[in-house]
Every structure is written in structure tokens, then in C-alpha cells.
Length: 283
Image (cartoon, rainbow, N blue to C red):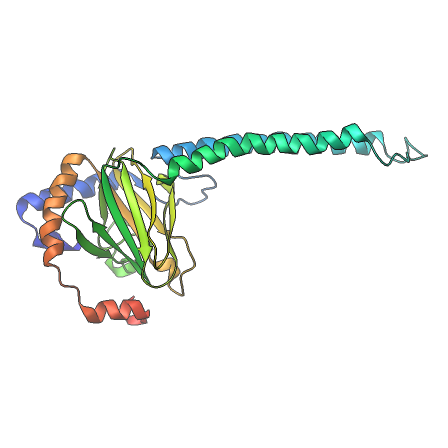
């Protein structure tokens, strides 16, 4: 983090330990990846299970249709049937191909709605995180921990440290405790954005004028990366999300530091105005 030099020895030790954890486990896009990222939240685990079920159903249907077409081609070709049938209706067949798809849709719909309700919101959250989308960066608030706030801006290529992914690393990480049920409130102050972290199974639109809610729980310490997943303007691809998941003890230590650091922060109006305007110099 950029502010490491400002910290005392104790705080620097905490942040250094967080960085070491983050370097060990990083959930981000990988070359030639064709499947989901590793599921590291209860919501994402259920999404992966549901996707597996739907994939199995699709494979069975595809294999059945392919086999049926092959049988028709072999059994009813012109050579074997010089006089084609003139059958136009088959009541039983029409009932079957109407009822069977309905049953398949019901098999998919029931767990689908259960999953949607499960990921919708949590009744008793351990903490709340508020994410506010701007063109083109995110702001974060911790209303349960002193209501401090900070901006997270994407690091330029020449600002990246070793191991930090290009276009995904930010100057400030969203630090969250492992195992806590985290209520996410998200909104925007200009256009529609979308706060999405694939490994955690989170994707929620940030809409100006309203606050949307969802939740997630992180299973393992490490770094988690995401991006805005809504086409929010010319710099849409340059507002990443970087989460640092730590133990509850390290999180509590970070909160003590953050209350003082971000309460005293004085962001430059000129810089933020340039970011909002999308000025090339600000990127």
C-alpha cells in the first residue's frame, strides 16, 4: 500500500502481514481459463454446484437429440424408405415433447430460485460494506466501524509492485475478515456500475438513486480481484476491485489504523475532478 511509510512500526507490521497473505493466495483471471474461478464463498460454491447440475442436464439432452437424429438418418433415409410416410400427427408424441421440457424446466427452476433467495440478502450480517461507483473508480465506506471512507483507484503500469496484476490492482485494498457474513450495499453517483468479484459469487448492479443489497462470506485468506461488470463508459475497464481477506484479529488491527488514516485523508479536489471527467492525465 502507498501509505506504508506513514505507519508506525506496529501498523506497518500488520499491513506487511496482510500483504504476505495476499501474495500467497490470489483469485484472479488466469491464462486459458475456461471454467469458474475457485469457489471461496458459500454463495459461489452453490453457484458451481448449480452450474454442474445444469451442465449434466444439457449433456443428457444433447446426447439424446444427437442419438435420435442419428437413428432417424439411418432408419428413415431414402434408400431404406423409398415410399415416405404421410403421418402428420401423433397425439402421444406431441404430449411427450410438451410435458418433458416442462418437467426439465421445473427441475432447473426449483434449485435456481432457492439459490437466488440464498444469495439475495442475509438476515443477520456481521458487518456492512458500502461500495459506491464513480466514473471511473470505487469508493468504500465501513458504517459499522466508525463510518470511515476511502477511494480505490487503479494502479498504473509504472505503479505496480511485483506480483500485482495489471488492470486489477488498486492503490487501496478493501480489507475484510474471513468467515464474517458481510452485507454489501452498493450504489452509484453517475451511471450504472456493477460490483462483481467472481471467486466470491458476487455481482450486484450499482444504480444511481437507489441502494442495492447482497451478501457474501469469504472462506479463505488472500487477495480477491474483480471489476465493474457494467458498460459504464469509456474507462469502464479501468475500475477494478481488490479485496484483501484477513483474519478477524488482523482486520480489527487494520480498522484501528484505517479510522485514523482515512479520517485524516484530504483527497485533492483537482485530482478527483479529473478522474470524474475521465481526463487522460488522471489515468
